[in-house]
Each structure stands twice: as C-alpha cells, then as structure tokens.
Image 1: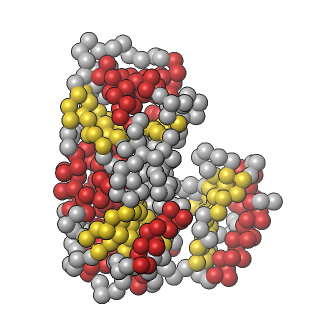
Image 2: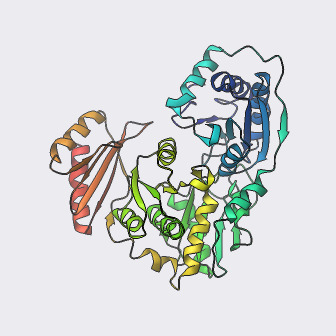
Image 3: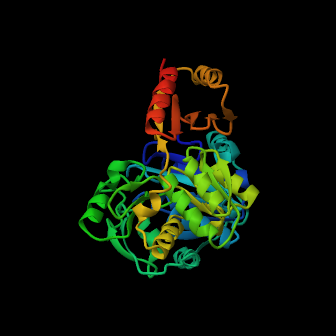
Length: 439
C-alpha cells in the first residue's frame, strides 16, 4: 500500500499496490470519512477498472451509501454527474496518463469539489491502514445506473458558436477521449485517431504534455488539411493542441484564446496559472476580463475559482476548468472554444496565436537539489529588488523579465519557469538562475 495515496489522487500498480481488496477497504473508508449517502462512480477503459469498481462498490454500499454507476466515462463527465445528480461524493477510477498496468482513483465531495492529500486522502489512508471503519450499515446502499454521456454532451454543446464547419484531427489515445469527443459530434467534423478503446495504450502514452506523444497527430495534420488538432490524455481531463501547420501550441496560449471566446459573451474573473506568459494576463484584460493568478494544482485552482465565481481557468499542463462544468475540467469545452474562435476569424490558428506569443519563455526546467529551502533563500536574497509574489514557491517580476521557482510535491526537484521580452535576456537570466539552483 506504500505510496499510493498521493497529493491529488490514489494511484498504484494493479495487482501489486492497488487490488480489489484495497478498493473494497477504500470504499468503506471513503464513507466512514465523508459520511456520504450518494456517490457517483465512473471508470476508464483499463481492463482492471471494472473489477476495482465492483470491489469499491461493495465497500461503499456496505457502509450504507447509494452508488450511481456511470459505467465508462471521461473524468470531466464524472464531475458533471456529481454536480447535476445532487450527489454528495464522486469517485473516478482511472490512472489518467499512466501506463496500462497502473490504476487509481480521483475523489471528490459534493459539487465535484476535489479531495486532495491535505483535505481527506491522508485521513482515508489512515482509516484503511487501521481498519477503523464505521460499523456496516443496517441497510445496505443501492446501485443504480445513469447515462451521463448524453447529458454531458448536451451541456458542452451549449458553448458552441461555430460559424463555419471546421475539420479537426483528434488523437483519442485509445482512451476516454473517445467518449469526451462525442460532445464535439455535429459541431466540428472530426477525423479520429486511435479511436478504439485499449487500456494497454498500444500506440503511445496518453499524455499530451510529452511532445513525442503528439508526433502522429502532427504527421496527420501536415499530410492533410485541418483547422487544428487536439490530443486527449488517458481520462480526458487534459487536452493538447496542434495548429494547422502541425506545430504544437503552448497550453497557456490556448488559455488566452479560450478567454477571448468566453469573454465575448460574459465578463468576469479568469484564472491563469503562475507559469503562464505575461501575454495571457494582457489578453484577459484587453477583452474586458479580470485576470487572477492561480497556484499550480487542480485542487487549489478549483477552490480559487469557486471563491471568485470565475468563468474559466487554464493551466499550462493542459487542464482547462469551466464554471459551466462545476468549476472542473472539460476538455471538450476547451476544444469547442478554440473552434469558435477559429471559425469566426479569417485567420488560421497559427495566425491567431502569433501576436500572443510575444515573449520568450524558458519552458519548465527541473533540477535535482538536496536542500530546496537553501536554494529558495539564495534566490530571494539575490533578487530582492524585484516584485515578489509568494503564491507558490517564489515568483519575482521585473519590467522586462520574470521567473517562478517552486518545489515539486513529490520529488526533490526545483522547477524553474522564466520569461523575458527578448530571447537574449531570457537565456541570460535562465542560465544565471540555474547556476544558483545547481551550485
């Protein structure tokens, strides 16, 4: 059981660190901790997701919770079900982009509010370890089924304002993007790739953050005529984009585009993660929105969105969060917003992105360090004449460049993101800061 209870979810290797017996105990512990009466449960296409579901279900119903079985669905669909069905809890059985031998669970409270390490996963782990479950309920919970796919697709479709038919290539990675993409049917013309469910991921890892996983999509686009391409991760709560030339579009640039589309109909708060280009904030302001910076991690972003009733938030990892999906991810909504913008313009996606890509970014650079505290102190001392933001690690802004340095939640790593108004300055400051980090 060691190490499967993570900062944001439960994740391990099936048959070794995550088993049916453990899933049964997690079900019991979940109800013991949350006192929930009605839980919606979805699962991905991994062959072991179904046996884990049945075991989890046994634990939940033993403790008196009613289970709504969503069957196979994307993670955004499971969040939507939690919200619209008035459930007081939700679990999605998935290991997201991890390889096929992995599985896990994403946990949430009522209204799809995530349960993270600090807000319940550690407590649930203790209950499982100590077997300190509440006594089984006198009346066991029931199990019913609900088709969330139709309901979700209808909700996503409300965002569509496509003014001309677009043809897009969509890499579904043999995973839950196949279901997520159903929400795009009839709105855009889809040329699908890897659209047969296969939990062994025979074509490539389902992780659009790894640029090599986008090569097949890029090749397809360069060989044909498409408005753009989209690639989902394993449980479809993240999506990456490729322009009509087959070039990868940075995820913060997509945040800026989606902001433009949403702000054209309603003004409000939009969050961008602190690793995003300065240009994202500038685009939000120019379009009449209120830009707010968020820290990294879905639990923090969703909380900040709720507190500010934000319309939307975008993260450079490809998570796109919408108020219209209970402040949670919807990759299909992200694709539709991009399609809306492209269809309304005479310009291509690459031409729309070009003016937003006006600064020079280092990308995220990881360094292994023994003492992260010492490094952060050294950076604070060296750059004490800049504007400090301590939302997540240390961010320092100057007039012509900025950087953020933060520590990893899970490894002895320091992550650097830096941007400047010229390529030369970006490279100079990047090397200067890396020298301090790696000394």
